[in-house]
Image: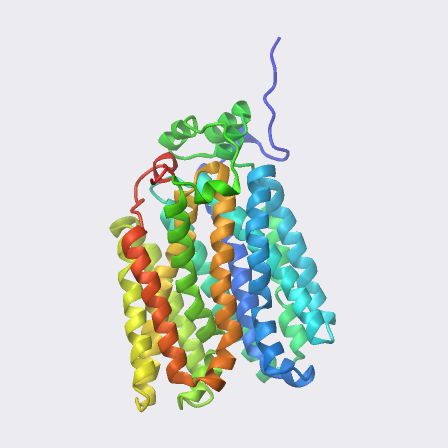
Length: 444
């Protein structure tokens, strides 16, 4: 008597185009990063209109700007824990459904606290998506392309962030639409992405880790392009992951490195980029809008450069030097109070480019250095820790610029970059060309 191996509903394993599948999976995961960048960027284009319409104080202005980041802080670890416990596949659709609900509710808010709660909900969904998407992509990607594909997701984030500024400018300046409609435009790409994600398979590494060997083997043979990756899955142990493993002697170096590195990359960038127009205006660069688009556009170029180089020169060379460059240019801005506006703009552009180059690695390392049983949780924890930095930067920048001045604010941002560079110098591993069982091996 023969038995039939279970198959995920809607998938014909015998007719899978493996390369096409990897492209589609990368696209639907990058789509989650796109909408994250979009909702974080779009708020900066309407913050003035919201402040007037809702009569918001500086406190509420900063809180609204940071609301999605606070949500990501909650959703990252929660989504990672659920993804490690229940599987990548179910969370992959659920988190996006929650995001769509929150995005649609933006059309109807009429108070600061309502907007805060709605964007908090959206942030929770995005945080969960980080913790599901990157591990899933790492577990399906061929090792020769893994870094490039994971880093490409950051390209999508910057595209979303920059496109939000362009769309926000057109909708508010050319068409004079209400800020609620501008914010609610994120619903459109989210619905398209939700439909595109239907039918994705479960991670074979997660299945193997849970002891579901037959399903894991079948999916691995059907979807994995590299035969060595198929063989590597057989090394997965049936082991339960716990939060404490992140801080065990085997993995605490990885946890500390990724968390601090990510924190120090995004804290100054989110603060400067979210309020780029007003920051550049304070330095005498007109209304700042053109400079803001330039800063975010050059950041996009920087992350594209990392995608092109990551499988050629490795991870460390794209992680460490760029953080030192960021520290130097921000220090110049902070200390040279009488610098010509053109010099200030060049420094901001250099910062955006260098910062984006190393930020591209924040999506690569978590999927590589944590083992399957805590890959989601580790990614979620690092995401949450990074969003403390992003949230504090976004929340405190208006206050700091107003009370401490632009010079001190930029010096503080430079100091954050120094911390990130120093920690990376000591702890950043090189994972290029290695399979996941090697990159996620314990680092005592």
